[in-house]
Amino acid sequence: MDTELKRQELIKENGQIIISGNKNKYNILLLSIIGEVEGHETLPDNTKSTKYEHVLPELAIVEDDESIKGVLVLLNTVGGDVEAGLAIAEMIASLSKPVVTLVLGGSHSIGVPLAVSGDLSYIVPTATMVVHPIRMNGTVLGVKQNYEYIERMQDRIIRFTSSHSNIRDEKLRSIMFNTSELSKDIGSVLVGVEAVNAGIIDRVGGIDRAMSDLYDLINYRNNSKMHRE
Image 1 (cartoon, rainbow, N blue to C red):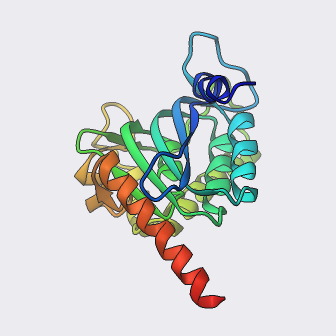
Image 2: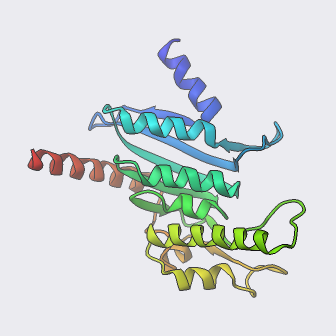
């Protein structure tokens, strides 16, 4: 397949593209996590979604491809499947390549751990993050095992988020289980700088600052590697 056709196909199908025209000649994977994170159940065709079976193999290729020097993750997601979202977040966090994340329209629910999974996180001033406890779709049997599963899954999300950001477990729980913020519900809505002040996101800024810092991280990694050698 022609290189340009393959490039367009990646954008169309997976929201992914390799950026290579920068002054440093670095190959950067641009990864978009948009709409709803799809898990084991296929979403309707008219629903914008990010499929974890597309993202995970691509990240594995990035880790093994020496020509790709970093990853920029763009997020505008309503959340979605918890297991799939955590799998993607863990995969991003385990990459040896520098990763910068940028929250655009929003990064809600399971989008919170995805937003903090990189080495550095950004949010634009108008973007939102909805932080709330796990919500189960459909009928949930009210038995002890189900409640324990939900609680343990909740703990996994909290531990991952706090260990990859500057917010402590206790503060994250208080934001997550806030009963006054969301009407007739529990949770909190954080807009732009509020997410930074809470310690979840590192900095407020757009694509220019995110890309600049990604190049700095790559340069720092390359210089450190040269000194070790």
